[in-house]
Length: 478
Image (cartoon, rainbow, N blue to C red; front, side, top):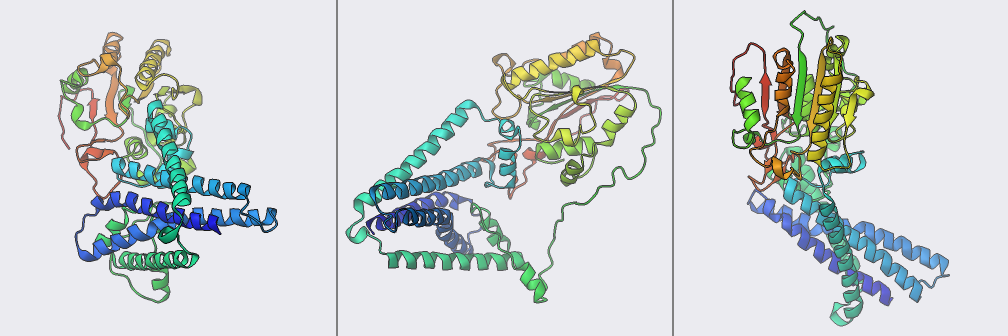
């Protein structure tokens, strides 16, 4: 009985800590109306109870197993230690998850979601994020600290579980039921708001980690209740008919193609001071994520088509035409072709021996340099009678921005252009430099390319420098 009283007090203390952690999201509420604030308050009070439910369930299962294996006497010294250990770990992991979600939201303005899960579970996803060894160590230490905090709270509950601080089973059960009813009320308000498209409530709900997204649409449809007019978005699915018609090729002047793409370059960095050679090259000459940007770049289609095209492994017409015309291919990346899944989309039909990735080992700027050396080697060893397509995906411009010291500001970013000129390739080549998307750099208090309530131009705008033969220099700002 004493053990259960200790755990009840421990759950209550953990609940208060979770409420305190969720209050960090309060500043993200945009609407100041009383009803919106009341909705947010009910969510901030009820959802910590929901986060604790897995701990309660696992603790209950552990107690049942202890009773089964100890012949109805679970609270021996060993049984008590086991029960305490399970709750300490589960409570600590709950704190770790909410803390991690809070850290992600503070920087990127979104919670743990399908994208984050895909990032974790897809090969190359964590490396693509740009986390350094120092970052991983820091988060490991913070996670260990939170689990240690869970242990400290359990010790405090064990130490002070007496008198007024002791929670009876009745008080604990009534509190749990009250919070469940509060959660049901919050979800009912959210479901109605979703049906009526009450934007302030819907926006406020986005600050809550793992919000349940309750919907009454199916019930309303059965009851023949017509919702207010609103826009709905349906992502493409099924089998894609691409291209819509056979490709008819004319006979233009044959061109080699050098396609350089940088990961997340800030659009306003294309200046003579920061990128001098690329700026000089510019005088001579669709989404906010890598998948979306690369897809629109190569396919010229709306970004959401990425997913069905990836599933069906449909390559872009551009690459197919180049392959049909016998272009020699050299496709290089300093990250991985698995994340984002370029091997299943943009380069799905390119021979694997022509795809070269350097995803591990040296820091990104050194991998970029190695890849450029590989491309120069390709130029030297290729069949001079055939056209070529060279692609390079730079990684050093992605977080954590690990440039070499000699490359910081005023460096020659594209010295290889002089190589093309010396080899007589520049005059019969289409050369372009661009980025897959833009990036926020704390201009508005956020970092990265997060999808949030505000779609800021800095997340979408990117650089585009292209040298067209016979076309005079032209500067476009939109």
